[in-house]
Length: 370
Ligand SMILES: [Fe+2]
Ligand SMILES: [Fe+2]
Image (cartoon, rainbow, N blue to C red):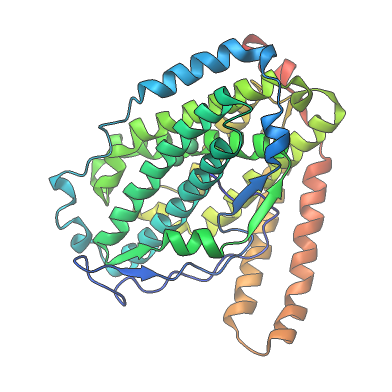
């Protein structure tokens, strides 16, 4: 999974009505939602720098992880069963809308991971075969995840045109170390998101609105292994997790990923309500767990126990609601931009404030695993 990494400003346009287009027998290609700072992004990087990386400081661990990837534990996992038959028809209209939106966002992030890993494996194959092989295995997993989600979209008469997305989405270029921070976080956050939903639904089977959630336990193990791979990779290139620059960047990426997720999930709280979850409580748990996990490799993590941290995120939630209200009110575009300006500035200021808050040194936070 690769989620967006940037300061939140406004939520994307709502998904088209799932009833409007196509049938399960002949799914229509769904127009991708408009790109915003909260929609999943596609990434590219400096392939030569990646190929030239010397992995010797942690080659053994990377080789062991690659061996795990070769075992392909989930080879037979993603097979649809009879539980999917007719499941889409049992959903009420509002749940359908938020669920299809969830499927689309998830499919796009999984597919974004596939594209990045696939391209990396192809471009560095000659010069860095071990790294290339790891990326190829991860691309295999992400393609499987994206395909499985897209099949569920077909149950609702929709499908994402992945070929169109590949050709037309804007690609954000990150240096290899920034790719490491962003993808490490997205894999680990993906793990905690999926496992938290899975465990909740285990206790509340009445809230399992679609059989895809039955697959989350093994699925999240793929994401966990992908995260462990980036952990090992950063340890192979110690400059990425030592020194003052990496401390600043790790803080930035943690904050950007957490804030984006929080604002987006609260704005789509209806989806979590449909699962019997409160979006805020769910996100708080996922953020705490991901922050704790990140201390295994990042030199610093965020102080997520401080009320000031959560207050800052809530300010951004309110700014985001104000931005959506401006969009909903219509009127000429230049006027809307003008009315949005204070809320954009408000988000910028809030991000800066949160960024400047003291971070916690990981040595103190999780000494046992470092
Ligand atoms: Fe995935
Ligand atoms: Fe992944």
